[in-house]
Amino acid sequence: MRGAADMQTDAFTLYKLIILFLLDKVEFPLTNAQISNFILEKDYTNYFNIQQSISELIEADFVTVETVGHSSHYRITPAGRETLSFFDYMISAAIQGDILDYLRKNQYSLRDEVSTLSEYFEAKKGEFMVRLRVMEKEDSIIDLSIAVPTEEDATRICNNWRSQSQKIYAYVLSNLLKEDD
Image (cartoon, rainbow, N blue to C red; front, top):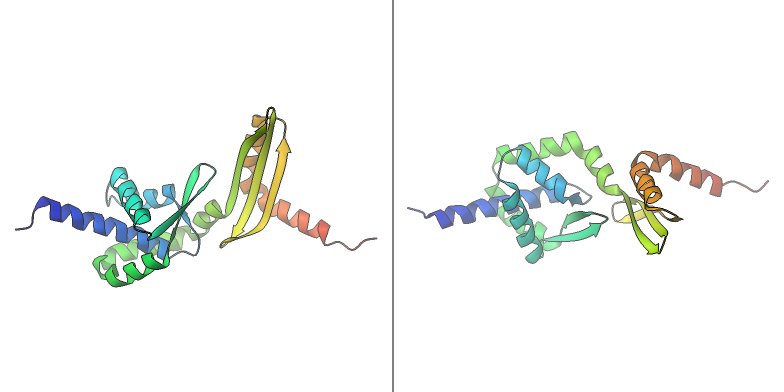
């Protein structure tokens, strides 16, 4: 009879494979919240097991992490893809179906969430720098830094960036591509 430790190891292996499978099926990074929300929504495990699994995947170099503003963005590495290819049979067809269905339904909102980035920091006493980006895969299609006088202004700009970025990008591009009169 298998012991509790073996069953727990199998469970953590499955959690890690689910995370790798999620990351493998998208062409953009996923945030900690996006990964956690999916797994918690399906009641596969609890938040602490998810965080431990993510940490172990990073430690094993199966996943990379980039901190942007206040969130962590995760990508699968080539070693993670290779490992997944050896063990993906351990993820049941039902779980794979859940993941693919979730990604199909939420692909655009997930991508928007990680491709429209905003953050700010205090540059010097009484002045804040706001950095606004729109990413396409791993490349910036717009990367804008603005100095503002207050943290309140910086917060407001960051909060509005997601809904206004397409209009601002179009405005900047059309004005910079204009022929001189």
